[in-house]
Length: 118
Image 1 (cartoon, rainbow, N blue to C red):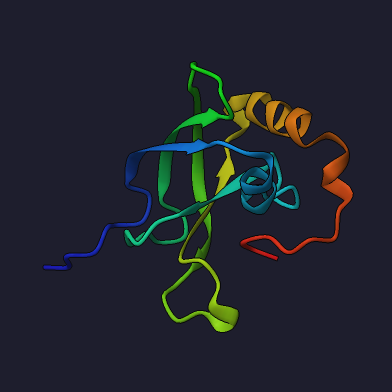
Image 2: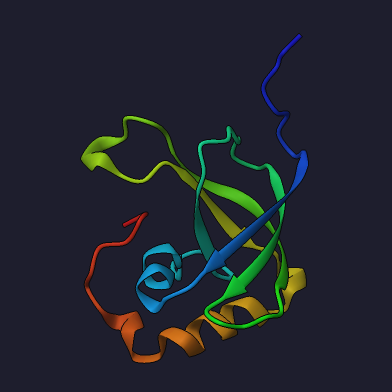
């Protein structure tokens, strides 16, 4: 039996981002519909479906976002990059999570600072 997760299997993750610097480092604007890098040591495969309960800054309400794993940074990645996965937001979100994130980041999106993925 294969103990690793099967591709396409759905999981629920809860993730909170408390400051703009962390949000900038996690946001993946180059992914269609937007996405976030989630630091985790759990093993995922490309194509795994995730349901994310996202809490931004000081907001009490969590944003429910369905997504798919489109990026994996494994342990030992070049440049001592953070271990984790990139989640592409589903089209079913209708851009709500992306709009909220971009409103927080506003003018900072054009910055050339490094992120967890690029």
